[in-house]
Length: 541
Image 1 (tube, rainbow, N blue to C red):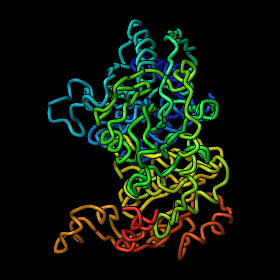
Image 2: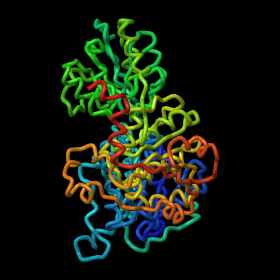
Image 3: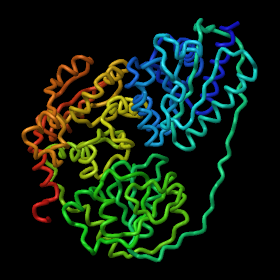
Image 4: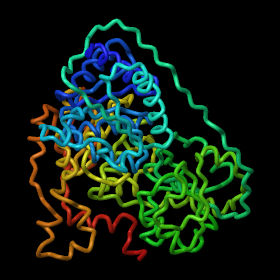
């Protein structure tokens, strides 16, 4: 009877998740996951829309699921066993919380009688992630009362909807007693009563802007694409658009590299806007927000989470999508002002050293290539020199800006990309998530992993601690002396070492099946000097 109840209620949980839009599951197997994992494997065979990945490293699994959820903009489940295994999901949950991604953790647990009682592999999992998972529920799958089954159906759909609607992670805790084996090939019909949610449409009065020097700042985009609507509005109303590398709206018609433009003092008084309309999250460029503050330029923020502004310089917040906002907006911008801004893209970028890799990718990538970019130097270089000529599908973990889990997140992205994808990373970031490479091997994922190897943490060479010569190299430079050929050998993937970015075009033109690791070596100290040459900074300081 216990197994019958466990089987039926597990089916209800999985069917309710599917009814809520969950199609991708990442499993980190363990003894306590037995009933869920086995029923899920059976469900995958029965339902062609269900996709299950097995990732034995829980930290990697959390980020792998995050990568799928980030790219598909839909909820993804990660399933793990009791004890410290669940805590390994914490970094991915933290990123999901800040990046507004509906990551769902199914945490299998020991039953109540084993809690706080010396039982092995047991710790308090009730609301384990605290404020990082504002949505939480615990289901007793072995309780046979019919109200319990109805509760599982209802609460699963309700909380998954809430997670999707607000972009927040969800923990579903599942205390389970032995025996854990479900009944496979069970013929009981499972019927889920659908719970539908109707969106209310907010109508606002038309917005008429009288200012004639208006600029749009398109920041990182966590929601639906709006590139086409934004470009059409920009052309119709002569409004220049500064597009962040993560806006998914950067094209050759938008302004790129605003950080380096500000650093080189190109944005003189004639470029000063009367108003900046800011879309999306916090820009990769810290300087652009500092510029808005320093020049005391009024800022309106438009986003589902509008008002989140650490610079505290937003004067009006519109909690709505950019697309909806643009349909309500009327303005007439100054043509000369618009053309002046557009000409900023004509300024030559002298991308040498590490930045030359991003510059070369901008020239050679096939259309619509999905690119995942590591934090620290890689994302900043992309923001400075990548014009969006062929692709806008640029992703990164910019919620809490960590370098842990970057490899796994990129691999998750690659599973739902229609063509071969790219990971651009440094050696230190690769090291932090080398275990994630097992998923590339296991599933033969079509991704080129481009490693900029400067033997350590390059970004610290740009910071004040670089002047502490006596301690800097060990404490912040942190050279690892990794042999990337051996890393590739360990995970059975082709390895290529290039002497510079110029060889990338020919290298990527040779298609392979599965993953490939490409290494390009640079010197950290030379990289600092190279970045000063990007916009001839010596001439404009």
